[in-house]
Image (tube, rainbow, N blue to C red):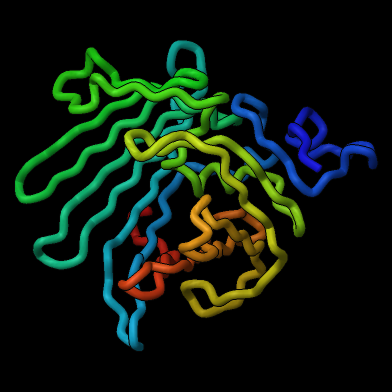
Length: 258
């Protein structure tokens, strides 16, 4: 059974037995049950692939969350930076702005730097539509436009969105998400398969929720993600990297300046 997450489910309140379904549709704009878990700060991840017993680094991925006020609205900003491994590694930056408490997306700016060339793509979210920000100088995506069948979440700050969901064993979250400029909008399913204990950056075991998804590409296998139960911060992610091997993303210890 599929239900829309209304006040009871989204806010984490007790719901009548008749609507205690395992599959929850998360609508854009509804308050998220665990929004209070999203805090200002930075998480860094090492991404690498494993093949034939060898590990090859891809990049260091930093995700910084901050809050701001704009035109009377409280917004959350998630700024991400991928620092490519090796001397020829490129740099990619994603700056996502959403409505605090709901993650209703406002805008998305992507900057890539490779071989000395900088490219910028800036997008605006408006319900079912995502368009290029026409009046932004240097925007390579100013003529972009796409429309979904229903209001869309921004897929780029996915970890921060996951962090605010009411995770519980057996629950499947269903939502429409879109990564601006990539493919088309779609509905995705994310299932809390159960609990697991994995080692953290300091080697100590962490009680986690285990989330699984196939990202609507079952031929590529299932991606698994572990979220600390106390904070719902992502600790680890693993999946199939095709001919490159097995993909791993793992949380690094905080740096002195964090």
